[in-house]
Each structure stands twice: as C-alpha cells, then as structure tokens.
Image (cartoon, rainbow, N blue to C red):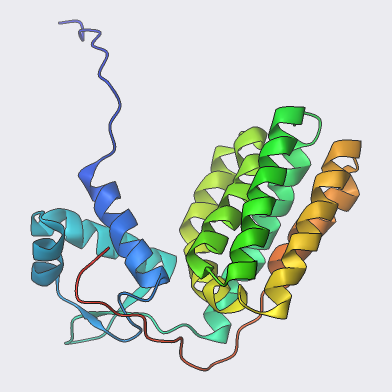
Length: 226
C-alpha cells in the first residue's frame, strides 16, 4: 500500500523542550554544580513524565553538562577549566567555519542584526545584566551560523556551546567581557568588506578569549525551575 502524503505542522518535541529547560537551568546556576538530578523531581517541576526527562539527561550528559556516578544519581557537572578548554576548541573552530561560509552571503540586513545584537550586548554589560548579555551575544553569533547554512556546524555548536555559556556568565561582568564589544565591531566590519581570512580568524579568537579558573561558579539556585 502506498504511503499517504500527509503534511503535519512542525512542533518541538517534548523531549527537546525539557532538554532546553534543564540546560538553561544549569547554565544560569538554578541547578548548581554537583547537585543531584532525580528524574522524578525534575518531572514534577516541569509537569511532564519521567521519559522525556531521562532522554534530556542523556543528551545533557553528551554535552558535558551532567555526569553519572556509579551507584548515585546523575549530578550537574562542575564547571572546570579542562571541560571549558575542550568545548572551547571545538566551538571556536565551528564559529570560524560559520563565518567563512557566511561571508559573501551576508546582506546589509544581516549585518544590521549583528550591530543591533552588539548594541544590546554592550548595554547589558554596562548595567551588569549577565543574562541579557549572554542572550545578546548568542544572537550576534547566530547570524553567521544561520547564514552559512551548515547543519553539521549548527549541531556541534548546539551540543558544546552551553558549556561555554556557563563560563561566559562569569566573564560578562569583567573587563574581558567588555572587550568583546570591540571585537564584535571589528568582526562586523571585516564581514562587511568581505575579508574572509581576517573575519574567520577573529571569530575563532573571540571564542578562544574565554578563560575560566577552577574555582566554583557562584550559586544562583532558586526554589523552582525558570
């Protein structure tokens, strides 16, 4: 029997929604390093069954945000220099590829999106809003990723970038974070004039500039998930 052609409206999978909620809670410190993650409790918080929670925890484990200990519950992975360096190497290379692939395709509207995101980033830095700074920084770099159209680059960035986002929350109130505003301006100009080598190198340098020590991240835990 021929398979019927049925067009279904796309909708995010529940598993993906749970993954995103847990990922964001780890990045912003709601779920603190070394905190135990019990699937029953997480399912209750999120109002879902345990199955999508378990699937999300497996994916978070592959991203390096959680770890499983023999005979113990899954816990939030500590933010350590080694894991940041590992993710940083991969993510920096992917953003270099994204910029290389996007130059020549970037429109003036795309460049304006980058400028607007950098303006929001700068404003968030000045008022000390780490969450808004992180969101604006993601919007800035997402332009090249979107325009390049490389699905593999997008997938790898999505897997490993959250590890860096945890470290970025510590950086975005620092002098190094404010220096990122100027690197963004330079990157926009290099993209505008079509300097592929210069823009790609700066994009990689921007991600490699992130540094983190082995001290624990501040505890921003709250009673409920966001």
